[in-house]
Image (cartoon, rainbow, N blue to C red; front, top):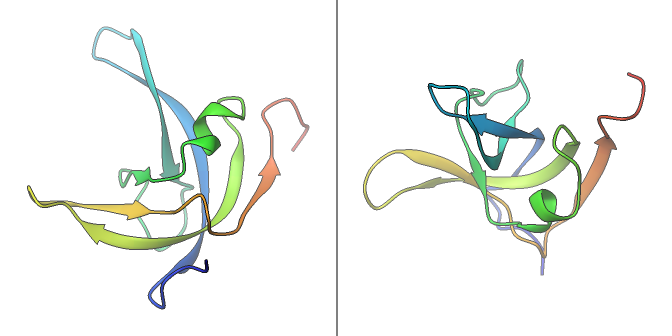
Length: 93
């Protein structure tokens, strides 16, 4: 199954969220700085990007901008859509 017509190619990265006290929290996905979408926008949908790769891995994915029923937006990507690993944190940039 391919992505919907309104999908876009986005470079994303995984990161570990920290609370105000600096305690490590959940692993999340966000767009990489310097693209159309702000870094504060979260990406949801494909759990394997979090579960199967180390924190700090960068990917290129197909994503769609979606609206939350409670307000706000997020990027959605499906496990059925193409995703490519661009770099892992243990690789030299």
